[in-house]
Length: 435
Ligand SMILES: Cc1cc2nc3c(=O)[nH]c(=O)nc-3n(C[C@H](O)[C@H](O)[C@H](O)COP(=O)(O)OP(=O)(O)OC[C@H]3O[C@@H](n4cnc5c(N)ncnc54)[C@H](O)[C@@H]3O)c2cc1C
Image (cartoon, rainbow, N blue to C red; front, side, top):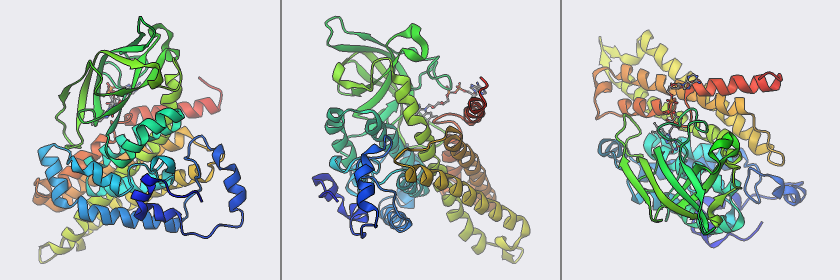
């Protein structure tokens, strides 16, 4: 085992999850081949179930301490992200779960990332969403596509929570058709010093707070999918502005923004991947993004059960607890079954990807299927939670309404349910050689 880096040492109470286990018989043979994975961190080995269970327990400890019911409610009501949370998440070692240890990461992979996102989302959907935008859409995207210099420059601060990350792909004209509709341009600077970005980005999670944004822009607007490039944009660069923070139905407090780029100069060293290869960067991240984000709805379904189960067993009507009523039992059974089925789907795919790390087997229909299924079930569970609580379910002092509003986002953000179905259908078409 390599010695823990200074960053990793700072989060040793989580990092220790990976150190005390005895080497397996084939360990050294595996270690020799470890660097082969293009989707996992250095020194990655698939976590054992007891490591994942312990990670879950520690994340639950963190949420009990730091994301209480009151914190979650205040985040929703004020529509403000609790800013001190970033540093707390960093100190707890939660921000770089898929990042290399040398940058402070846990080097633990996608099952672990799902576990953390699920438990954070269970405590607060919006804190979970902001976490995912930072740790998956930004940190993991840099891990997958950044060069050594970019990783060394940006990852330590992102993993420690000193800096906040975001990813900006969508625009007013570029939602489901994100490549075809993209208007943002990146033209070569006349002095050859880099690129100049112009345009706007819409609905960007963490956009109002971010220090670093992964931005997609057209470097050759007539070349379609072959004319887009990904850039790392430092938000202190002249010409970068947050046009407005958006007011939302749910996920309130996960700050979402419209971003303006007015002649933003980006040096060559900030190109993520290669010029005109932005679609490759986009596609590298999309399947894993869908998979990891499917853990958000899992947490929300658990939260729906957390609020509903005690309530229907305590509150009596017609002289008996609500939960003894068969209509209520039907709802509880459906909620529980939806959570368990979604959870089994997500974690089976995450486990398969982690365990195939030497040659990662990532199937688009599996990743899109996991989030398609979990997202729709989570909205249903949120609605059922409101119904089970009756009048109190409709009150903002209870979590049920917030859970339902938060859950609905997962049917839209990171691709809609319709697009996920389309993507799954097309994956089968591809396998059958049909376009
Ligand atoms: C809270 C929030 C956070 C977000 N965070 C980010 C972020 O961090 N970064 C980022 O880049 N983007 C982000 N997004 C943007 C998000 O990815 C887009 O909203 C999403 O992809 C849908 O695009 P759209 O809103 O333009 O909807 P549209 O594409 O206009 O779609 C509208 C409706 O038409 C349907 N539709 C569209 N095309 C088809 C088709 N071919 N067949 C069938 N139905 C179709 C859609 O499914 C949808 O129901 C966020 C959005 C929200 C709401």
